[in-house]
Image (cartoon, rainbow, N blue to C red):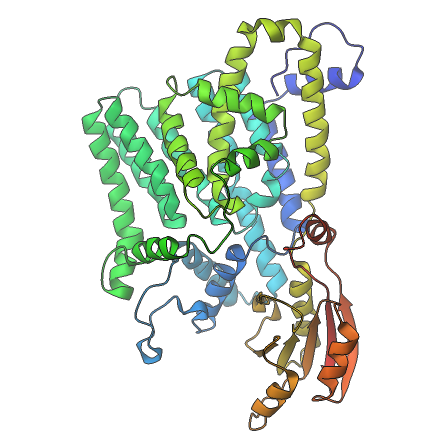
Length: 513
């Protein structure tokens, strides 16, 4: 990762690490990145957050099934005439993929998701490749190899790269756009147009990236490249017209309907989610990149502000907005990370040779780097093969394998706020009845008197007061037969232990006979 080792080889671990780094090439880094991401794609099942499954996978599959999950498409017969707070571009891509799979008779939900994760694994290599190319262009190959390696093996990158996280998926278009801007030394208008057009894909995936794209245009204006800024803007506008406005006009009757609905929703509900102090994201990034190394990167990042304005200004505007805005969900800051790594690495390693302190404390620096590498390798080994939110997914996979599900009940009367089951993994459209603290089994039994399709399975969510809840359920549905207990994953249990708000609880499956 760019360490300057002296001839002291007493520490064999450090020496072998140094030798390995010395042999790095871009090709080797890409193969390593691919191996880690394919491993994650195979072993890391489930999903990370609500949005990366229920606003992408469930929505796209419902369209294939002729449904309208979430009411994201207009349906005047049901009074749905206004757009929801979502861009349909990324779910639309998955609709095409799932439709193709259906045509090829690929119906197993687990197999479909494996293919989706593998596609994301290959797609994410653009982050490593263009991170390397950008760094090499504005600094040198040694720094570029450091950046490429960090983007390839940073402990959370393989796992998050194969998820349906819009915050990760929007990164490659931003890096490609920046690459075409910084390589454009002769003000080639073709490069400027491509930079604007490709960057705007990020906007259709994640609306907040408009701050990045706007920052690129502002930088061109600050550099007095008036014509270049105009061409860049035309490229961006054409992309938005083709992939946002036309869809909006067809579906809702006016351009940017989804974007305006998204802005309105976030302004109204900005305090309904995770909030915190303005410096929360600074601490989060500092933790993700493992201190004290992350502190070095923070120093390097701000040191590059004037020298590499094309990368600094767009990323800083994005960071500043999210530090200011009230809604501070962790994943929102992920598009900033690659730019932070690029500029932080360049700034730090430009500074280090000029520092008298670090020239006198080379052993301390080597030990810090060794500590960071060891911690990163441990976390990388754990998270690359970790599945999250698996109990609900596995419960529905279990029911799917039984092939006789008519409808099912979820008994969640001990839960405060309800979280959906990922019906995608059931592989078929079946009615789901939810029992909560304000809706009992007795009420459900009464409501189902005249229904032809009676539920024949019940899933008890969590073991809290499980015996009393089973007895209460039996009072209305007398004959139930225990089938299976679906446990949570190790990571789910760890997250729950760290913060009980992560309610990823085990499931108890019974047959209603």
